Image (cartoon, rainbow, N blue to C red; front, side, top):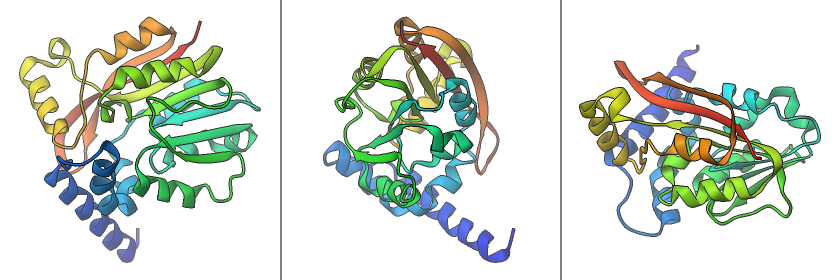
Amino acid sequence: MGLRRMSLMGRHDAAVLWRMLRGMPGRGTAQEKLDRFYRPQAAGYDAFRERLLHGRREMIELLAVPAGASVVELGAGTGRNLAFFGERLRTLARIDLVDLCPALLEQARRRCSRLPNVRVIEADATTWRPEKPVDAVYLSYALTMIPQWQRAADNAAAMLKPGGRLGIVDFTVSPARHGALAGWLWQRWFAHDGVRLDAAHLPYWSGMTSEIARREALAPVPYLPGLRVPYYLYVGRKP
């Protein structure tokens, strides 16, 4: 890695860390708070979170989306997850990237400017619906950012065709699995940045779909050696 690239990464990381230390703004609409939180760090968003948000490639591979399929990503952010489709991306009929944050969607539009089968949509994941049911819906580290997460989960399932696939990867915490103290600390730490950990996510998904794959694991945290954050991956099929 060249010195210039390392210097750029360092500046981007500093912007991300500073914004995370300051936390999610407390005033304004949901969209205003998201934009104020992410705009100062949008340029370095992907590079930093590449080392934090694990399981995304595996989740998308497990979706096994066929050529000609229609796909929706709710809480798509910068559109980074498109790269995990590889060559399959150009075979999809359409993929809609839906997010509420203007700053991150600006990055997504730049990334997708030469992808005619990709639409970037500024909308609320709890209410937006495609024109007709789709083959697959996925959320990547987005559900914990949505206060009314059950509405987003129900909306995701509702826009799927029968037999369509639903994929989720996100942070989690369970006092029974990770210990009461660790659970409390993770919940407090994440809540500072507007992330709401909830052990009810996995049971909710498995109650509305037939399970294809499910995994819970621990991932490293940038700049905090030895620390591991719990996350889960789930892929299911709509009856």
